[in-house]
Image (cartoon, rainbow, N blue to C red; front, side, top):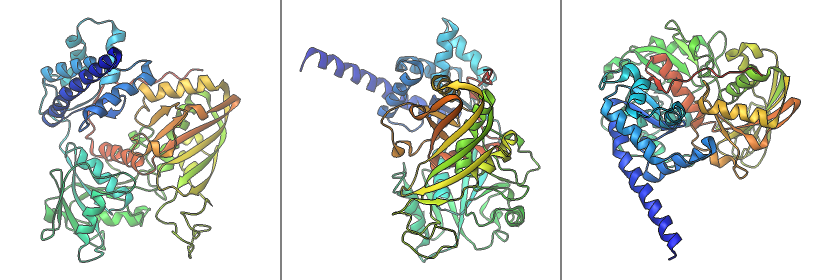
Length: 485
């Protein structure tokens, strides 16, 4: 082995050792103080040493160099000594702000950033809210994974409601939660109690309730009260249908994981979640495509102005299509989803205006379903008010993804080798593919990838947190991005 190889191996071992030392610290802060740590939006909780090193390495695409593990370890040590209360800390952004501040005292800087949270260990901003998943399909199971991952802080997954499909229904439901062909194995342990109809997943006890009627369930009989029911069946999409949930004892509010009809508010988190009021008993989290494109469209409209545009969605097939040719009430959807590209309609372009009224009447849209199980792409073909070029447009969207108000919704990548499967599990609503951007004068074409299952589910959880008032404060605070041309 050459001297260079020895040095490289020793350097890597040192980084592994440092990352391993961070794991229990990250865990303690989360479990004892409800401090959620991340690096530019990439969560560190329950991650391996390799995952932590990779999160630090990703920063090179943002700040031009890898984030030093010693720097984040030092920040974590300070946070622990300050005994802080419930808060969400982005270590990457906090370290960058510290470096740019020129401060020589890390403890003093971090203490100032955390403000009133210092010395508040054990205190929470709000009591945990009970959550019930009505339906347990693709979105329902991913919502369960995310809520279980959070360990009951803020939101407590208490029950799922399904129609009984077989004598061993609960075993099959647990198996589908445990294994997923797209998203992989559940990260943890699952135990089933058939006698009591419960699933225990990483310490979260989930009551399985069998019912065909959303209006007649007594949730209080299971100790569930003032719950938010998340209807992910898609069976009811208007106020009349979804109001049935409010007739059940123990239900306070309802969230629909599909575009709402009529006067229901369609919420895209990061755009119009502030429109949710205490009087709103039923709201919609819109669609996966609407969540993917609306933040990017808002950013572009704020900076350059959108005169009009067309949204073409290249969307993975969904459960409502046929595996092989058979009758379907929808046009073209009866043809085999796994063998064909299928042109179909999408309401996403029109739905954008429900969350972003300034784009009312400015967008058209269409969709092509393709033979992939997850991760879709939206192509935004826009006519802008202000001329720009590829570099300016991309730099703006890149900066938006890093520290602007929409940093939880928009991600950015400029790798020449990425394909759709690389975005499975993305927690952002959409990921701008910078290398694919075309911008000439007042015409621009922007490509946005999105995990139409997991990324959308993360947006849904953010809406639930808003409804419940349980989202922890974020440090460092995000300032509105300047949008002057």
